[in-house]
Image 1 (spheres, rainbow, N blue to C red):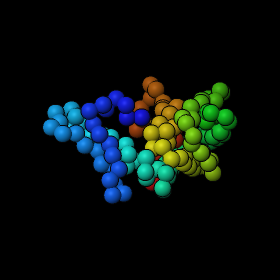
Image 2 (cartoon, rainbow, N blue to C red):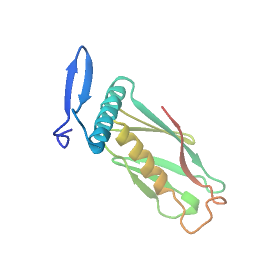
Image 3 (cartoon, one colour):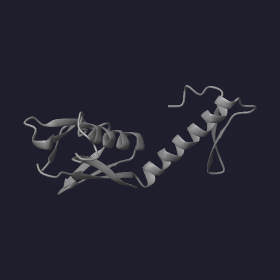
Image 4 (tube, rainbow, N blue to C red):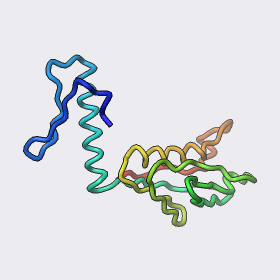
Length: 142
């Protein structure tokens, strides 16, 4: 939805999408680049899709991950009694196999936000992150 960009024209010409603004200010120039990037990501998402791979890392307490409905439940994280949960944003598929989580979808913002929610849910507060490396981390983006 590009209704906020009223002065910028988006048109299809010779099988190419053209985003332009005549005599733009600095902000409008930046907005043209932003809209072009969004359109590029939308096209890439529909044709190829986006995939984030995450690794489950633990040293002592084995972490188990389950997907139920719109949430990812992270159980036994650093020996905690209750599971932590992370929201799944939008229409995203999540596969958990062993110590790997694969997040796939056509919208890069939904896929990356879901990965960020999972990574944020396993953040350890009040401890040195160089010592306590337990968590779930993104290691590959496709």
